Image (cartoon, rainbow, N blue to C red; front, side, top):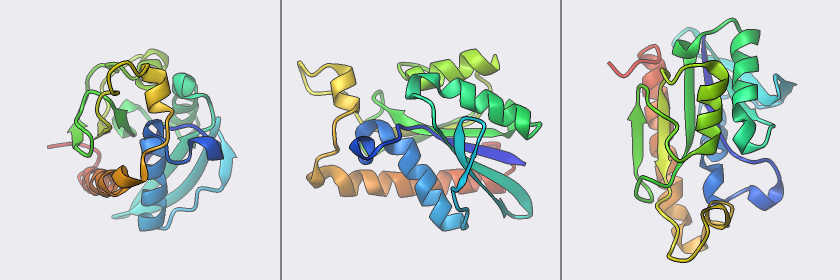
Length: 180
């Protein structure tokens, strides 16, 4: 069993903001894998399906972004999984806009949601798929930037990145959650 968690914020006002790339990737995976996100459990909206004969739990935490770790911890406990069964997808300001990077482990960097997950589950050893949103323009506070709507002119670039992130997640799932 694998648990894939997309990080973001609920609410129409956040639907296509830079900080919602993980939610948008979860929605993309939902469509691709035919997993309907309709259950409310473990402080998350979840759906269950399978890929290559393995059960997949897809989740979007219902917590505030900075408290995503609570939902992830609850999901791991509920499904009797470890961090090795977890894949997290999220936005990253430290990667150029539109790029996608996959890492097997590492710190939460500048992402408060990831830092909270690591603190809650007690390890940074789990795969993560990062969707680059780039740094904010000069003089724009980080919080204002990540919560701002993606300009229409840049949506296709990020839509393409979300598709690439989904490709990477499916590849990870087909390999049992490991890069190698």
